[in-house]
Length: 261
Ligand code: MG
Ligand code: MG
Image 1 (cartoon, rainbow, N blue to C red):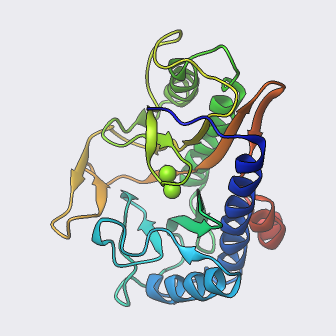
Image 2: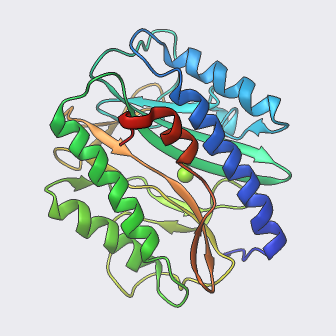
């Protein structure tokens, strides 16, 4: 069942997602060598609660954090920890969710820790660009496969590979609703895009091979070949006049300045 949202509901979705953007923007000020992912998690939780919302990830299927923090070869779902200390040259995907006024926001950004190798930065740039390629295809009357294919085609043209085991998703009152939004697929296939659909598009793109491993902690997903992986996510609404991005990287990129991807 795909729930189409009313204009009022999309406005509430926008507010929840803007708060995610602001939370990621706050974290952008703190991401630096020596900082632990648990510290980032505490900053995020406090920020979210101070804004009258609750962290959507905390307790979700038993997840112990308010953020997913995934460093270098970790693809997604890394658990914040006092043992995970950021160091110069790392990349970290920070995925954040909020519950506000009955709706969920969900967005992710991959940050550089200090100076990062040019080839890793190129992976981040391409992954972020593929997200926008996907969004451009999120047009009423097209299909989910058009989004999937746009992401895949762009990333593979750059020599990167697309993770298959994890996908984007519909979103609304629940974090994960139908339909699934894979980052690979065929044009013209999959569910029809209709105005009022809210979906998260979230390319997870590997520098090496596409294969992933699920770690014994029950959550963390990493690349099998231990090469870097990047992850960017926006929540969007399908509207008659085109896709509307409900989340935001503006708060992040304002705070990162020239260090933005
Ligand atoms: Mg997310
Ligand atoms: Mg998501």
